[in-house]
Image (cartoon, rainbow, N blue to C red; front, side):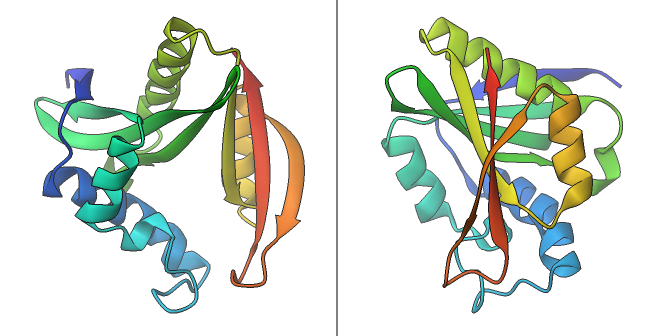
Length: 160
């Protein structure tokens, strides 16, 4: 299979589908619903993704043989800090290194923009994902509770 990453100039329903289908496995594992976690990417709509792009996020798609199977967004937070958001790989394509390649694309984008750090927020209780991010150079920086969320959020950072 040929895998490539391309910049997405205009998000569409295909991007939404990849993100939703990818995040749905986590939503099911942690019993997330539109009611108890409305901002979770498993429930993202095109208008929210478009708004993220309009805020300056650069978006990239991962494609296997021309078919969209992955996604990642990067946007400037402040100074030399960037957020990496919506990192997604469809379940059937996981454990093949595509997520790591999407992280590498995000790191390149941040470096090219003059950034030095990438920050992410994940479900703290998702220990498998947390360990995967650690294996990709991220370190835990903070764990925060939000009264409107049914989980705690683990913030992680990576120096680029």
